[in-house]
Image 1: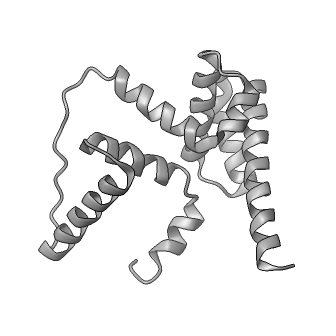
Image 2 (image 1 turned 180 degrees about the vertical axis):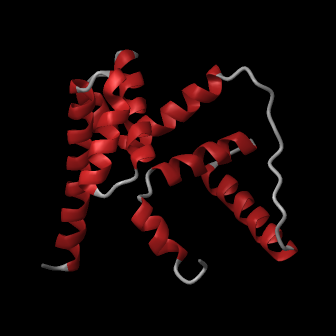
Length: 153
């Protein structure tokens, strides 16, 4: 199998998984969401909280009138981004300041990267960055996170 064929198979498999998750969400009552996430997580080797959030995002979109076909077509990135945006818009709490103690060079690199992402994606607020960052993490499996950490851990 060529590199291109392998990449195409990966994309098709990812889209197929999303399609099956949308169909599964339709068949799963919201009260059973956590049990479904737990069962699927163990069987598929995927994070339970990630699956629960995806199922919640799908249920909320379905309840808002988005059809399964639209959810499948738009994909999980759109669905999760909408979920995060809707949650943010429904929040009544004041914003908070995030504080961590890190070395100055890490702080500087983090700031440069936030600015870079903001420029590339056209963000004008820190909330836009954090919504994007959270959606990226939501789409990353536990295994992908472990792999990406490499020798940092």
